[in-house]
Amino acid sequence: MFRVVFNQKGGVGKSTIVCNLAAVSASRGLRTLVIDLDPQGNSSQYLLGEAAQDLQPSVANFFESALSYSLKEPTFESFIHETDFENLDVIVANADLDALTSKLESRHKIFKLRDALKALKGYDAVYIDTPPALNFYSRSALIAAQRCLIPFDCDDFSRRALYSVLENVKEIKHDHNRGLKVEGIVINQFQARAGLPQQLVNELVDEGHPVLNSYLSQSVRIRESHQHARPMIYLEPRHKLAQEFVALHEELYA
Image (cartoon, rainbow, N blue to C red; front, side, top):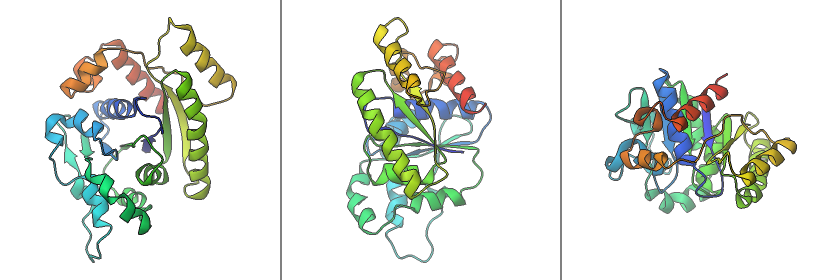
């Protein structure tokens, strides 16, 4: 299954959700790949630590290869790096992606990722992290994916942005990827004792949006998880937030 985690709003937890769901998949024995398409490289750093900064080849090299006229293009597998976690691999991102955008758009390489994933063998689960914008890379991911998860961090700005996100996903589905499905809205940084988050979630449910049942709590422990480059299931598997990621994973695979 190819899943993309997408939201045009920054700071809603895309990389955190990608890496923690991927870690749960890997811990369950599924051979899992994370594809980082964000020039900030947060997923890459989360899974590899400081080693991700200068690691080559990167996903930028993959897209750069699409601009050449070589008769023998490198395989997608040649851009994959192992992590320290069993069953969990990653294709890293870096700032080189930014310089390639205009060339890739002008040469109409928007289907390059989709074609590479169709040819990919040996993985049970693929999670794609995206930049906080509807640009070439996020469109490429939405065209390549089968399922889309949309993080929602329980404030009014996120709610306003959500409607635009849903419309953009709907348009890409209609124009380029009829098999794409919004698998659900992931409620992130949820505070059960605060009135506004519950009110916003209830309103989304009442409007008929596909809100997933497994909420992710707000916790300072996730920042420590980032710092140590260890997703929650590996850092502290019995922690409430780690178990919430497990519950979310089980809901997706039910």
